[in-house]
Image 1 (cartoon, rainbow, N blue to C red):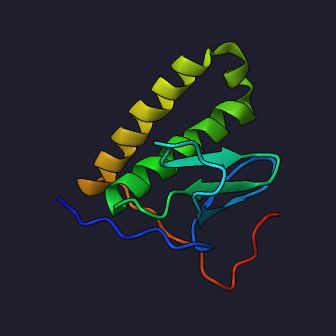
Image 2 (image 1 turned 90 degrees about the vertical axis):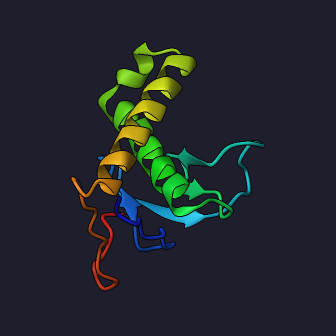
Length: 116
């Protein structure tokens, strides 16, 4: 299995039609037991700083799926429990695909501007 890179603050983003969301390592505002969260009003994705690389990527994908469901309007039709289940399933699957080397994530270059 492929070793996953660590997520670096300010290097990775979650893309949204409302503007790209920078990923930061921060636990402020997260509920106990949460590995991360997305705040579309503030335009940020938080990942708990005390996670390993696999959990970081699973959280990254989980929050990206929340963003996609919100952007598409589909979150309006789902209960919170169902939405969390979808995000968990796809986050886990996409992380496994990365570990298997079947998908690769390229980070933006530091000089590339964000869409925000």
